[in-house]
Length: 471
Ligand SMILES: Cc1cc2nc3c(=O)[nH]c(=O)nc-3n(C[C@H](O)[C@H](O)[C@H](O)COP(=O)(O)OP(=O)(O)OC[C@H]3O[C@@H](n4cnc5c(N)ncnc54)[C@H](O)[C@@H]3O)c2cc1C
Image (cartoon, protein in one colour):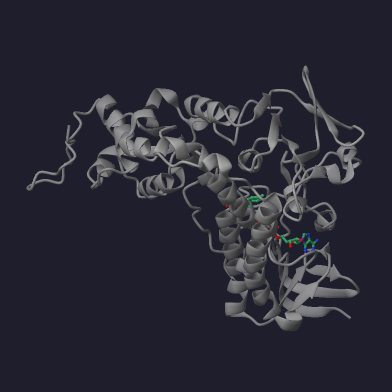
């Protein structure tokens, strides 16, 4: 017999749980089905353990600046890698336990098992079937590992397996230098490992601005061997892995594969829905309602292959959850695009990226942090920040940066872009001295200088709303 429910949510990750929160406000008739470990990718094997590792790595790396600060004895510091990993796991367990409480609170409405679609209103899990008015697919993604590499067993790691390692070997290769690969490669290097980082493309961490990319490449090359632009081949040696790329051939003890993540759609039964999938096997969906075609089905989070970020997964779960229990679909504006890579210097992008700009129609303001006062005081004087604005009225369009405090400055820019502010509007704000944001102001003034308009000064005259620059 089929169980009748209003909504079936498949996947108890960040998107699925955000959907549950909305569904629960409007109906008690739902089930949440999850396969595999509970606790979300973000808390278990993603955002949080990676950041805990990065913090330990950066704390240890700080010893290289100690002598210049006048602090003696740093050469005597050593790292206890098993203790570092144990701390990462205990933090992870703390984050995960908080999430698990929310699924446990659902009682019988939380079902462990692999869900499969039998039709647009029917979901099977184990020997149960659910007939649902609406279905939300929030099944996440998994790390891609080419088939032949799997034969290398535990010499191959992904971020799904990495954090359960009790210790780390002396030599590691990181394959793939998107956001995750760059973060992990730098952290491993800063923990004292010999790191060889490979990517078949020249693009690092999604950075598209050539000046920002050059800065990132230079700073990564100072900490690890970088091999870009060649496909990688892996094979087993007697107790390690041989890595080949172009003319490079070397041996490492273990390899972290970070070449991308694939939506968990393969065995979900999308074929039963009678919709046309694209060449990647993805269903058509509306990113403002999360609805798949005109079906009573919504798709949220990493599984739709759209944005792959935690705050976006949570937003999509919210949208799917609201729409799954409403008669009329609500169309939601998505937030200003924002991405951060937790490297040092930090990498961040907001709004339009350099690669999507109409170069003829825009101004680019730059700052190099090499001589920036506060950055020098903190020995963080490395990095470039580039802001893009419209040529006619200096309206902020986007920014890319590899810069100190990037994670904070990019939020300020996100607010400005979201509110449709111009470079002049931002220049009218107070900038305290000495702060890293003064570097941001330098880039804004660079835009102001290039503008064909006669740039107003930073300070507004008492009787006007015009804004003028303090020179
Ligand atoms: C190493 C790493 C670092 C990251 N760092 C950041 C960061 O700093 N900032 C950021 O914004 N994002 C980061 N991300 C991305 C972020 O973690 C993801 O975007 C987010 O966790 C996706 O959430 P989700 O709900 O879509 O998927 P998930 O949390 O993966 O949830 C999907 C759930 O569905 C289950 N499932 C799969 N198939 C089925 C099925 N057939 N039936 C039932 N259940 C199923 C899965 O087992 C899983 O429990 C990082 C990711 C990684 C891997």
